[in-house]
Length: 306
Image (cartoon, rainbow, N blue to C red; front, side, top):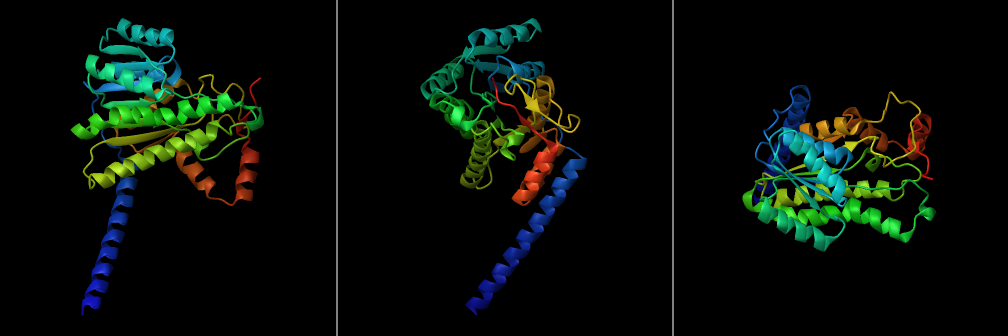
């Protein structure tokens, strides 16, 4: 009798899971047609790493325009201050600039404490800082490899260590991280950069899942991972694109606008352009020979830096 009860109970659980899966699939399809309403970021404290130029600078300007308090972090004090001063010239004065090497754990924790005391608890963290060198693996020096991994991967751990506890305490916050389309498909001369973007995906997914599990699904902290294609920031100096109309170089302003939109709509994943995320996911699951054939035809990659 007990065995029959257990079997029936298991069957009911399976049916409930199937119904939930169908519901969430329908909900996702509905959201493709009717996007979630954008939430306000007015009064939020937004910290952006790599705010001295490129996407980070445009993110700082964008959030300041939305009446958020903006905290700019960059290793380059001069360009970081230029970003702050440009925002102030717009009449937005809730902006702060701190020099910080995000690859240095002690420095991150020290500057984070300073931000907390002088500005307040960060509620939106955007891990944007990233570096890369396009060259053959054997041409990379050990120091280059360490530096890329420290900035592109380890820095995420240090900023999460610094700012996630206060978000958990208040059950309020949003983490945004920039990965890349190369976390789905790699290219020659990207043997350090591409794996670092794979790692960002893993960090975000694992941290989000841990909070969901530990809070029994009650965590209100959101996670958004962004996957841009080629962006005109100077990181990739010689991109190769056979069909530019399919994957044209994006401007930092375009990418920043899409990131802010994704964060305000609580998207968990955001491809830029949007269609590339699904396309690359599907391509990735093809047989290796088929994937190689497609990649050779499309001709997406980069020539090594001089």
